[in-house]
Length: 103
Image 1 (cartoon, rainbow, N blue to C red):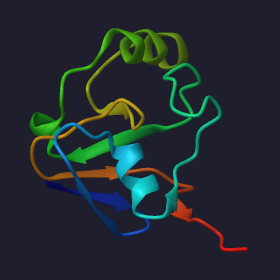
Image 2 (cartoon, one colour):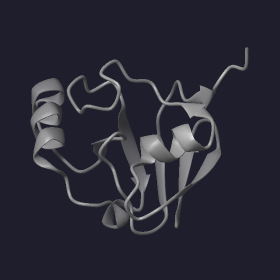
Image 3 (cartoon, rainbow, N blue to C red):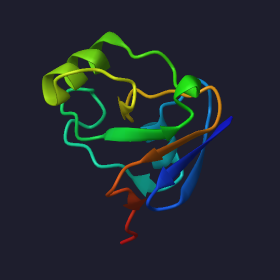
Image 4 (cartoon, helix red, strand yellow):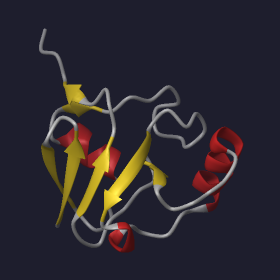
């Protein structure tokens, strides 16, 4: 398990090696903004990596395609949370992450 700190919320997620950051957030009871429901096609879940870029897993082809289409390039500082895996501590920024509302 690796710790991912989500700013500005200050949320610390425990992310398993085979789990994406978005999946870990959902498991922990948080909503991560998305339109495509984690299919790597909308780009809404893009997050800014602040620390720990070397602990981020490789960028899969579908993420690379979406980042190129939506941002114009792939630089490693911006990643899709629906595809982002980690191997160590990472700090990132994503506005709009919030606890799931209970009914």
